Image (cartoon, rainbow, N blue to C red; front, side, top):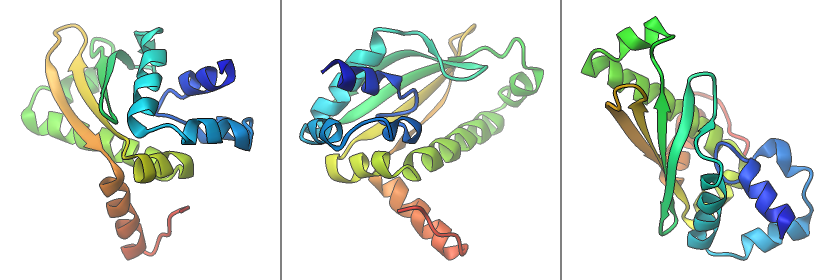
Amino acid sequence: MKKILAYTFLSATFLLSGVLENSYTKEDFEKIDNRSGEEIAKNYINEISKNLPTKIDNLTEITNAISINSKMYFRKEFDTKENEKLKNMLLTEKGKKAYIEMQYEKRRKELCENTREKEYMDKKNIGIQDDYYESNTKEYIGSYSIDKSDCIKLEQEQKSKGKYSLY
């Protein structure tokens, strides 16, 4: 059980990291795979919440996380004081929208090109929503959701561009 909980927590981006995937046995995955999407999301959020806030890159940290049914919601905050370019970008609605779209595309590719994560979205109906806020002002910047339909769309986009996905 400790192995499963540790595994669940170590994935900073979602449920399972491709880097960590090779260190777990088929039996470990079967224990996780036999649970409902709602149970997987709830357990993941419970584990990650024990260590919040947690830094996920040089600007951003997850400050809150909840699950409702099989969807996980993450509050992400970042400090623009040290990054003038980002600060200036977020001064306009157009800039905020561009920032959220950039984060969405990055996250969608990250989740949908990982076979295990895509499988959880497909078979367990797990989805995520990331809500972004500026940490000093607590100003809402924007949000996006990702679920299995986003992965289908990404695969179609890649095929139309002549790029084929890993799944």
